Length: 333
Image (cartoon, rainbow, N blue to C red; front, side):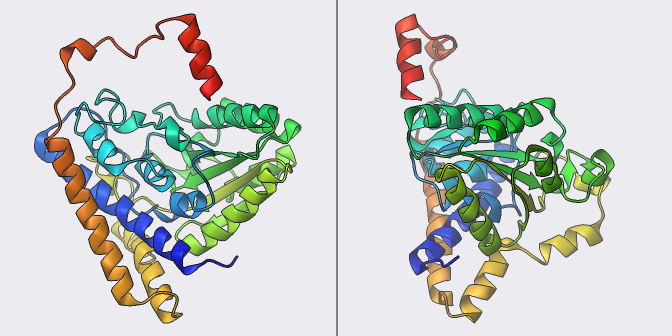
């Protein structure tokens, strides 16, 4: 699938922004001893970048506990995200949700979610709503290899396949569910084979290659917009850090394995190919990296200059105030 230079620049900028954001968030949370889990997707940046390059603000995305990259690729404000993680009132969720609950309905970002597999029924519901409205919107569900055996995932895929809903299931197979190797939990080498049970396409994608992800996602999203139903994409990738930020992955995987995956780093690989093939020059890429680094600096400064949530906010946003509000918010979705 042909990619314009502008799209290439945007994809590289997205990947380096995700990585800079997560590395800085890791540092800030550790230094400030903040409460709350932080699940990093460093190493996996090509997957949300390649998928979301085909989406608009009107399209839906449901995320996981490892959702920073999904949010950034979908266009959620980085300053608001950093403020959320650093527990400030200007955060995307007023500083009350933290890393695992970042959401922005103006960007179609239905939210990160700590419940394994829960992104899938949410995306299917959004796709069903789009079908009912007769729009050309699509919904994307990101989930990990650890969610592939959840009952709700299969129920949702089955329903989406029967009704040919405009939803794309993106399994980010980063090889481990917390510390459990994927081959310990699933008896097939390619999780995309599960699609055969629902008579939908199942595609194995090199998740360390943003070009491959872009091509596969473009085909799947185009298929969904055309009314041909869902696709399961299995993107084989790798997380450089542990399950949560301060988990030590050396307890369950080897240095040799880590080095082999890191040798295929998504950002370094993009840079090498783009320069070698004359798609972008090194100076452009350097400038985009500098811009991303500055954006993260600005986001930390924004958070530091923002107030903490007021105590009066403790019980707000827990329940909808009235049935009228509930109906209005449902209509907005």
